Image 1: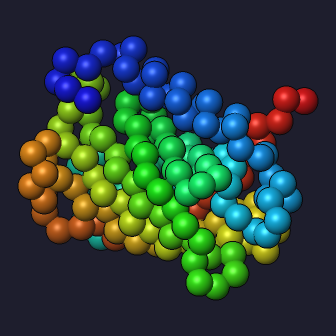
Image 2: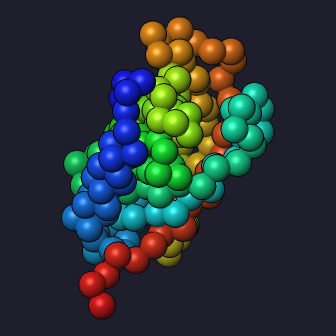
Length: 160
C-alpha cells in the first residue's frame, strides 16, 4: 500500500478476506481432523512492548485450505500469510504480515506476526502465543518485538 492509498483499497482488502471466508468450510467438522480452516473472530493481547495503538486489537481471520491466512483489522489494515499443522494434534503455526496505516490510509510500516496455536477439543476456539515485530516502510526493525497472545472464536459463514 502506498501513501496515496484510498478508503477503496481498504474495502478491497476486506472484500478479499470476505471472499476467502466464504470459500472455506464453516465448521471444524467439515475437515477430516481438527483444523483451523475456517473463519475466526480473534482478540490479540500485547503483554510486552505493545504497539502505539494499545494493548489489544480485534480482527477477523480466515485460515484457508492449502495453508493461506487472510485477515482484516478494523477495515484499515489487512494481513496475509501462511499456516501449517503443528507436530502435535490440534496444534498449528501461523505467520502473517500486517500493514500499518494511519486513519488517513498512509502506509507507516508493517508487522511480522509469528504464532503457535492450539485448537480446543471441539474445534470452536483456539489460543496462540508468539511475537509481532514492527518494521518501517523500508524494512528497518522498530524496537523490540511485542509478545502477544491470541484468543480465537470460530464464526459461522453458512448461507442459512
